[in-house]
Image (cartoon, rainbow, N blue to C red; front, side):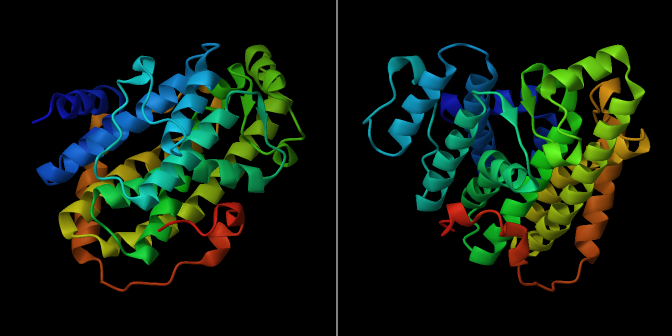
Length: 304
């Protein structure tokens, strides 16, 4: 096995615990591919979140490589392994992903839900597309559902990381939901325990998680296009992420009280539930709801 695959699996084990757990149910070929994809995305994400002044330059250089303007990555970025199995769909998705990360290099203050959904497609819906490629799933309808599962997970990430993101000058919660409170005001509200502002932001988090449920419900419908073992693995990964939102809800959306994580016991319970659910699921494939992608027209035709 190539050394970079082994390295990728270590990155997955150390940094993507939910995905690593779910990956135990994948055939070896696909866990290798999933790990390679996770490592690829993780390195890009680490560059974007490093706070280094060169981050934007690095991301732009990587984008130039992906669009074919540079024949190879510079030596500084040679550790990025572009998955060999990527096809046209994955290549376009990876460019959309990098564009989303480039947008993170400035302060973020989304005004409307449309901005939130477009961003969530760029940094996570694209990963759903690339994962379809990794799992040899070529059905167009299935890929539309995969985009939704990625968006749902990203919305959950945002709900979990409201305070951490605010400390980095990023406010992904649409301003129209939270009285246009700025990232600095969110940090200040948590620090000073400002009950009024905390409640406003909590209501925004609640709305965010309700929105995420729409995308989780859609994403789960696409699992029927996958072979059973792969379906179970993806279902478990989605279920563990979804649980973060459930825990936030149970804690009354207290975004300021620390990051929610899922315990190993919780992962075991979700795993058992998802296996039972997928065994008993009737194989009824449904049409994708186009309204879920109404804000993604600038990315269409999405190469699926």
